[in-house]
Image 1: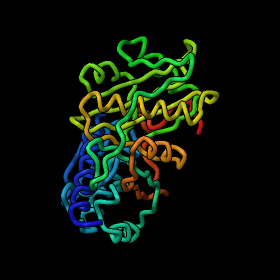
Image 2: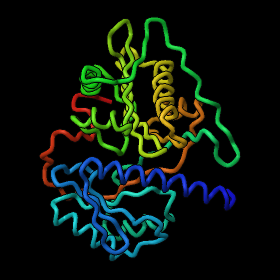
Image 3: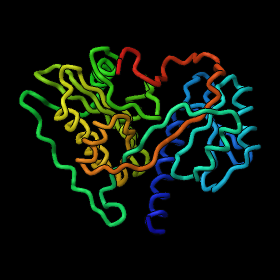
Length: 294
C-alpha cells in the first residue's frame, strides 16, 4: 500500500473512531484524560463498549505506564480493566504491550466500509434500489408505533441477529435520535408482518450500520442483501459519505462486498478477563438483544 493509501486509510479509521467515541458519550459514557490515554466509563452500565481505555487520538505510541494508570482507574470504578482500539491505527507491537500488562484478547470485530467516492482509486458500484420479493415492503420508522414494532423484532427470540456493533443500543432514546437525524430505523414487512429491522446511527457525515435482524424463517441471502442495501441507502440519503459496519460473519461480509463494501481493519479489545465488573444497573442500555440467539 503506497503512502497516499496509508494516509487515506488512517483518515477513514480516525473518522470511525471519532464516530464511536461520540456515540458512546451520547449514550452517557464519560471521558477522562489520563496521560496519553482516554478512559471511557459509564456511571450505571458495565457494558464493555462503554467502559474502556483507549489511546488518545493522533498518538502514534502510548507508554505502558499510562495504560496501566487508565486500567487502574477502571478498577477503582468497579469496571473490568480493558483496552479497546482500532488495530490499523497502531503497530502490531502495541498488542505485546497489552500482553505485558496481563491483558488478553477479549474480541476482535472486523470492519467493512462503503465509501461512495471510492478508496485508492477504486469506485464502488452505486447502491441500487433493492428489488423487494413479492409481498415484502419496507418503511422508515417515524412514530412511536414504529419504534415499538422495531423493538418487538429486535428483542424477539424468533429473529436472528445478523449484525451487532460496538455501539450499544439504547431503549427509550429513539424518537429524539430520529428527530435530530442521528438515527435511521428501518422495518421490513412480509404480508403485513414484521420480518426484519435495521438501524443506522449518523453523526455528521459518517454512518454506522449498528443493527440488523431477520426472522429466522425469512433469513435468506436475498433478504439479508435487501436489508443491508436499505440500511446503506438510508445513510447515503442523509448525506453520509462514509458508512461502516461490523463484519461478524464471513457470509455477511461477502454480501457486503457484493454491494461495494471493503474490508477495513478491526476493532480489538484486550481485558483482564478474570476480573469482574460491578453489575450494570441501567436496563435501558443493551449490549445485545435480550431474547435473540445467534
